[in-house]
Amino acid sequence: MSLSVVHIAYHLLIPGLIAFLFFKKRWRQAWLIMALTMAVDFDHLMANPVYDPNRCSINFHPLHSYIAILFYCILTVIPKFRMVGVGLLLHMAIDLGECFRMQYLQSALH
Image: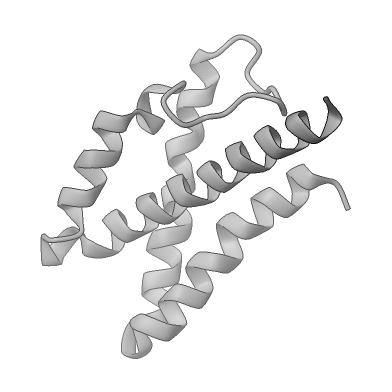
């Protein structure tokens, strides 16, 4: 299975696990909201090329910037937007993990 498919699967499976563990009474709603935060990747359409498997998204795309991530942190303390904030932060954490993986692979090759 390609790493891109695994990466996309993480964006669906990890929010599902978090929803099930921490939002037990409303886990389906929480999972759906957090899965929908994948829409944050629409900012990739502004990049050229749109998809680059060797590019770190964090602080490259506008909605993956450090300022945006700070805003997502603030969302988690507002009860009405908590699930959205958690979903966006999970998305950023998964993308950051991908950045670390790429950096590790590059250093292992040299």
